[in-house]
Image 1 (spheres, rainbow, N blue to C red):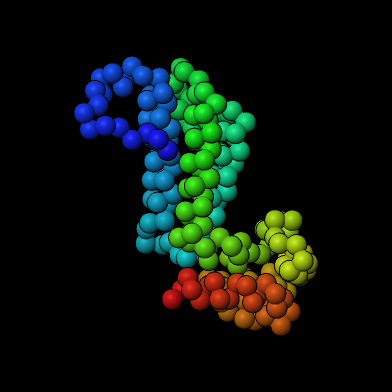
Image 2: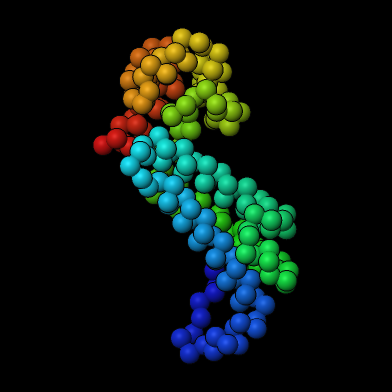
Length: 187
């Protein structure tokens, strides 16, 4: 983003500048979202499953927000929508690019938490969102219909590693992806 200001900038003038106000409102919304997700990770009863789930949800929200901005829909940005000026095309593109970079950075710093969306709970994952040709889609459909697997999941909770180890012979592709990621997260 090209929003860096000269130290000698007159901020009184900036408060009358439409683009500056839009930038400030957008950044306020993004920092609010980051603060909210950060707070949701904290507390005495939080587990790695909570972290993985909340981070995955946050990345999915950012992706939806990026698509909304590309379609000139800004309703998810609370402060931004209170500003009476409409952003121009260039500004909308900068916001979309910023959201794209934020997703990329989160995936860079937390790759193991998001790339295996079924490791925490395979029973609520849309098979169509998994890679084609890896066997994951087929196995996720099978495990979602398996009542024994659902019982094992309940029995093993909160130990996800034990769940996947017990089901590794029935669902080898899913277990082969989930267990190493869980080991990284727990280590």
